[in-house]
Image 1 (cartoon, rainbow, N blue to C red):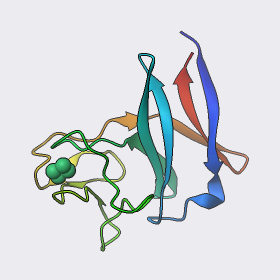
Image 2 (cartoon, rainbow, N blue to C red; image 1 turned 120 degrees about the vertical axis):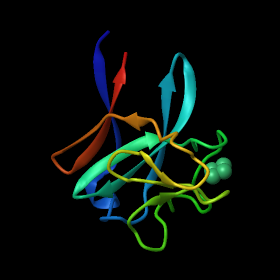
Image 3 (cartoon, rainbow, N blue to C red; image 1 turned 135 degrees about the vertical axis):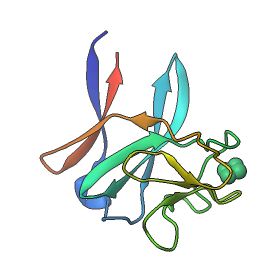
Image 4 (spheres, rainbow, N blue to C red; image 1 turned 30 degrees about the horizontal axis):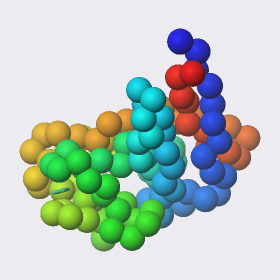
Length: 116
Ligand code: FES
């Protein structure tokens, strides 16, 4: 299957450990909510679905980081995820991490890689 890139946002829309950008991804013909944040200088994207209960993480649109700005947090029960890998690092996710989504940054733009 061929991969294609789809523009999500400008690179400048993603401050380090700051507000993220929500977008939709199509998987198996179904729309899936996803998001991208910047961490460690790189865009990091995941399906917007908690490992505890399959709900979206952000309590206010685009707010995915906890107060320390070190972890992604689920707004419902506070599960914590590592922003580089999506691995569960604490709380009710109980080892179930976020699903990574491939993204690339090029020429000041951030793109999601989708399978056509
Ligand atoms: S639904 Fe996310 S921690 Fe419970």
